[in-house]
Amino acid sequence: MQGERQLKARLDDARLELEQAQRRGDLARAGELAYGVIPDLERRSLKPKPPATPPCCARK
Image (tube, rainbow, N blue to C red; front, side, top):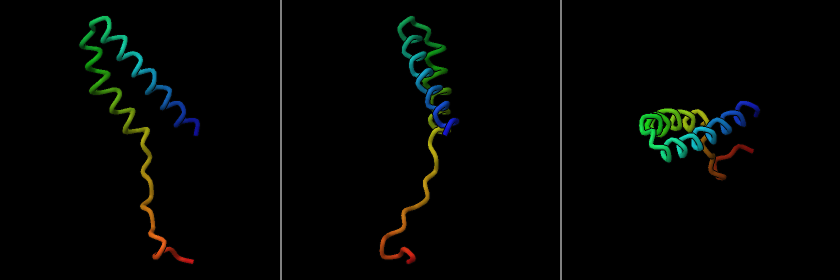
């Protein structure tokens, strides 16, 4: 739980930094964040979910 919360906080910080970089015209940093840092954090924040079992096939 702690790790997931920390990851989401880092993702929020990166998105904020992206906005700031775009405003000041730092396109190199904006590109690094938009195409590298943020997608990486998003991938790591997604947890694989087990496939749903249809009710007809669920064991009782």
